[in-house]
Length: 219
Image (tube, rainbow, N blue to C red; front, top):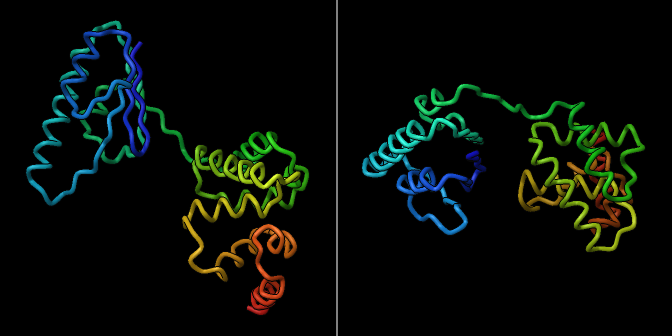
């Protein structure tokens, strides 16, 4: 069977048929020995780039059509809106994986947090707050966020993972860094991190945390 899958940066294709492999190799450039292709974004301003993109799409469609009849092609994309409609027509079944709803996020939290001793899973309120903080995250995003929190806890030799540890990773996933510490503290407080957790885990002065907490209550 042939397998094609993609993420935001890479397109990975695995083949058990050398003829099909050679066919696909003719479509793309920069092929390496692992069968990984780096996909570069195409700007809408360069006619040459758009012409090259059209050529690649047409070649891809042609080579899909020429796959042997006993081949099974499975494709995955995070950017379905960028695909040419003609490519969609080559697949007999299209399955959409929506982002997890609140209940599903809760189950994912239970699953991934089970890998490390924590003060979250057995606390319904903390679970509810993390579910809200993770709203809009994909299944992969939830897994990555929890795994990053666990890795950080291991590095710091923390015996117990708490909500603040996970919320920090959620914040970093969304904003990538802390440009505004006050905003960061507000985020942690909004989703249930305690003053003590923020003070000890983030090394932020308790007086500052209490001051921002007071401001939030007065708003």
